[in-house]
Length: 135
Image (cartoon, rainbow, N blue to C red; front, side):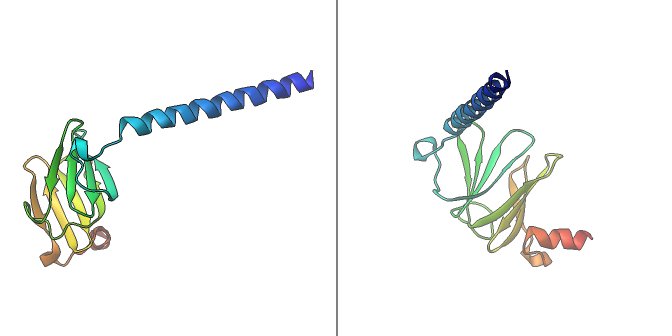
C-alpha cells in the first residue's frame, strides 16, 4: 500500500514538472522578437511595462517601445536621451512617466506625449540618486 502511495506522489510531481516546462516553452516562443519584427538591438539590458501595456526595452542601442504589433525607437539621434546604453527602466504605477537609467545619465519620459527630459543637469545620474534625494 505504501509503495502505491509513493508511486502516486512521484507521478503527480512528474506531471507538474512537465506541465511547467511545456508552459515555459510556450511563453518563450510567444515573445521571441527579432529583426523581422523591428527589433533593432541584439542586447537587452532592462524591461518595463507601462499601464497601457507597452513593453519598454532598454538596449545598448537605445530605447524600444513594443505595443504587440510594432516598435517605437528612441536614441540620441531622434530624442532627448543623454545616451543609448540603458541600465534601468521604471514605469510609474500611475502611467504618467517612464524613468530611464542610462550609462551616461538619467532621463524621464512623459509617456502620453513621449517627451524625454535629461536630468543630469539637476545633479541626478541614476535612479538610485533619486531614491537618496527622496529620503
